[in-house]
Image (tube, rainbow, N blue to C red; front, side, top):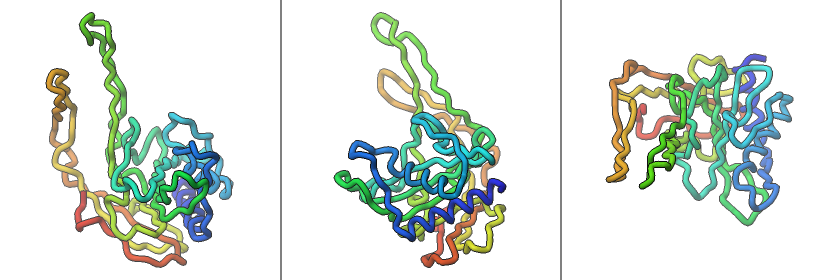
Length: 254
């Protein structure tokens, strides 16, 4: 089984689970992070897909054993923030350490008192749809010299906020949708429901400066050498699914 087929098969499992109303179950009311991850883990186990056990600081959450694919899981409570998400010190990637990275965004009711609830909708998307730059490597840095005695360590711990597919696309609410590069060969059991193009920006951030006296952060920019490059993607649903076609919001490309 190659990596593309593994992704398509996992998407089929996810679509079937949502259609069958397979519930998210929390181990306890304090579980605010792993309940949707455990729901997805059960899908991988149902498909007999071997993976390394996820840890609190691993990226992506599920790293497949037999083929170079990783799944990063993002649960979104509704009502709540759905147009963007905190990346927790790791920018979105399409390829990371040789693995194709697939993001899984699932929305469910934000009901803190309940221990089980359904998945409203779900979008699986290739990381390149969120960010096509795979060269940037996240690193934290530090320097000593803060404070009146000069012996306090200042740590620069970068955090990122990226758009979700729900903030970029129309036609994905109450649906189960897959977004992959146009070049991927989808099996016949999936229907194509949209063609999407994102275009690289004219400039990209090359650094930033933070003034400790004024608390002002200033970005530094450089010309993007691949400005204007198009990245084409296809949106799919299962044959049995009905729903609107998928398109970028406002007809925009980035």
